[in-house]
Image 1 (cartoon, rainbow, N blue to C red):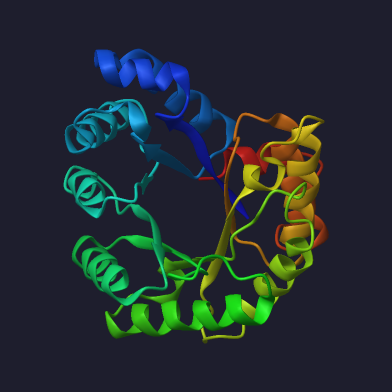
Image 2 (cartoon, rainbow, N blue to C red):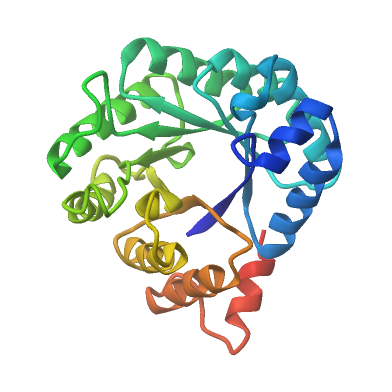
Length: 264
């Protein structure tokens, strides 16, 4: 399992101000930090701060690529904004994200095929987020079928079962774990899986980091391949590395945590 660094996002005050002022320093500082900490992708999201999100996305992509070679995960509900970022990406990127709704899948998977991009597919549709695993898996199958119809390799499709905060959607947790397992049975080769890691603790007043770390370890045991999360949380990265060793995904050595962080 690898981390998609979450920090270059206009929802954060420092990044929002950087976008408004076109100041690359905070963006590039977080790009370097997350790269050094072991992120495999960097999530790029203009957030609500941008008066011109298309221009802001291009700018964020360009200034980020000045200081890191990591591939980018372009995050927006506006697909014109994502395509503007794809046009200036130096490496194949990831599109974040598309629900199981045909007009949106058609737009996104055609774009993914054009730019050789990976796609995060959301196990939801016009009716919202399902409560049970079976409905989540059925929607994941729609995403698999749509991706295949556009020639998207399954290793480039990441299914997000959609995590709700455990203080308001506690009964969703086991359903998410079951979905992670069942998604692996939908195709051969199987699509990959991803979650928004911090969603599990959103709105919680207690130790959010502890909940995020525990969820990460449990999800890895259920087949999780990637997560949008805090790459600069050293304990989280150590837990991920340890879980990978326990699940026989990486070979044990005394410096396995350092090796995991340095892998790209």
